Image (cartoon, rainbow, N blue to C red; front, side, top):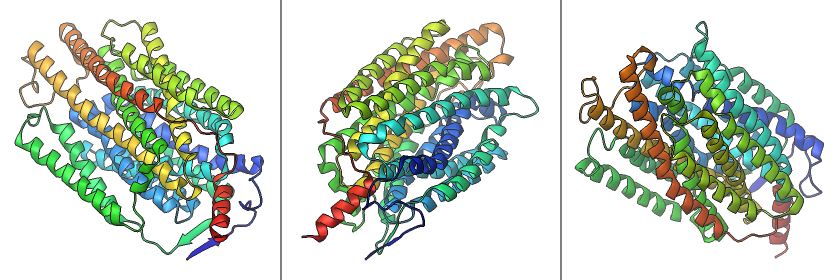
Length: 526
């Protein structure tokens, strides 16, 4: 049984498309919400070295502050996506933003790294809602043929949030009477504004179906992925890669995921419908999204640490140094979106994005402690251009090739696997970086505490170190960061290979709501 609760003033999907003015009004709150999510993830990047030093954390804690949010986001994205097919999308977005407020307040008041990690989990649950629901709402209102135009607007919001985040974070950290805690608190008023705007402007049909969400499947997926992430973050320094701990954690994680697949195959409303992967476009886009997530998040999340430790820059300058990648991403995503809408063709942009991203990864694998800032900025711009052409257009290709009734779950599945790739990338590559830094510091500076076998070197405050020690530590972090990008090169190459096999299909000219009404009418006539 399905009922639809119409809301006053909303467009009827069966009678025609939603006017552009109403679409822009509805997207206003959505854009503010996206801005908040982006700001929260970017504003903390330049603050992390200071936060870790202030709270006396280690390199592993540095990794887990990022991984905790990514893991929570990854685990909850499929649940948000499934609920979007069952309940009010507006209410779900407002709920996700409310969780984001709670997580931000906890993070801003945290007394230690343990509570900070917990707060990042709460933030991640809220971010998972925004990540899944923003694209779902857009697909419900806007035809794929027109999505490029609006994606350009979101590209601008993404660019502003990404540009503003590191700069604001750097200024807050460098301002003594504010400090890093305001990196979390500053997003709270923006989130509250987004909730109010969504209440006033977003009007979509509310569908209530008498079905059950597969919470068991969601729980098993979360446990399985979490187990593998715990292993990848601890292996190499808490225990050897080839050890009984590895056998237990990897074997246990894979067993739980196998059980999750069994549960999902039998569930009436699975969190991740396995039937989706019979669709070639969805399968290849998913593979590419995972690999892009691993390479992109796993490599770039440590760039701010490279700027501040290996190059000795302040948080504010580190924020300025991220601008080339941001502008490259902003320009390429906006231009690609406009051209896709104009020409109706999209695969060329995916292939070009894959090639350019591969080049950017390769260039960044050559960086060192002596790399000039202009050269570094060119490398980062190349990477940003590739990512901008690739990431959202993978979602567009998949949305265009599935029934409207599966738009929500398809979008959430792609977001889930991209986030999982990012979480695995940050965790695994962070473990590689921590191990490499520990080994190099034990080799070059054996007299320093925390550099013995099986330990993780504390993240240093280089401003307090003697010049000879400072030079060695800067070289160690530069070497370790370059090796992360080198690992990302083959992963990005595999993403390009997956994109090459995606078959281009004409973009649909109907919105998700219009397509759904048409599909239901066709089903009712048989």
